[in-house]
Amino acid sequence: MPRPRKVVLLGDFGVGKTSFGTRLAKGEFHESTLATLGVAHFNVAVRAAGDGPLAPATKLEIWDTAGQERYRSMDTLKLYLRGAAGAIVVADLTRAASFDAAVRVIEQIRGDEIGCNIPIALAANKSDLPSRQVEAAAVQAAAADLKLADARETSCKTGDGVLALARALVKALPPPEAPPETVELEGSSSSSTACC
Image (cartoon, rainbow, N blue to C red; front, side, top):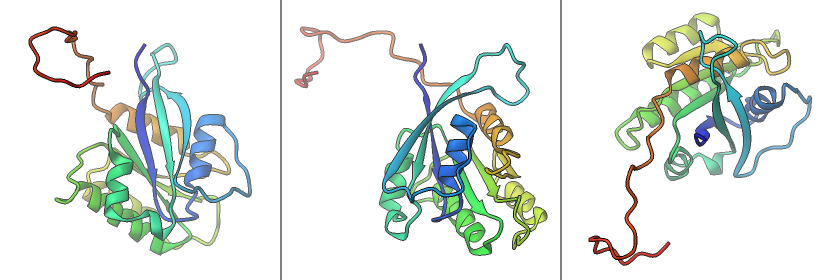
């Protein structure tokens, strides 16, 4: 049985990362959610975009990360990304600063200091709200400029775009690493002294 693929939810405080994970994993939306401290996890199975209903789904372990300032250091970002197969960066369409921060996070992930070349999707969230500060053209421009697996408007409240974005990200995930075919046992030629 294949292990779940780790996908990290990143973005500013209050953009809807927890709501995105809850909508994707449970099909639910809660008007009020508590701020995530550290990391929370969701498990969900998602079929790749374009796959039919009988195609196997990919098991995902969604890491919902904290968005507060103290959790946004480069070292914390590296820690969150360790072992990740992909990332979903969430921005709030009603707060232009959160969109700019999302673009910066993507640039950090791909930049020299982290240098992580995993597929990334951008969820431009809260599309159901009328007070938008980010236009659809900016979302599509970011997708092209940053070479994202997907970028689209989403609404965790209505569910619009959430599953479609996740399916597009799953389609862009690299194949899982194959388990090693051989296992070294005690007494083998290895000089390692580590124990299990």
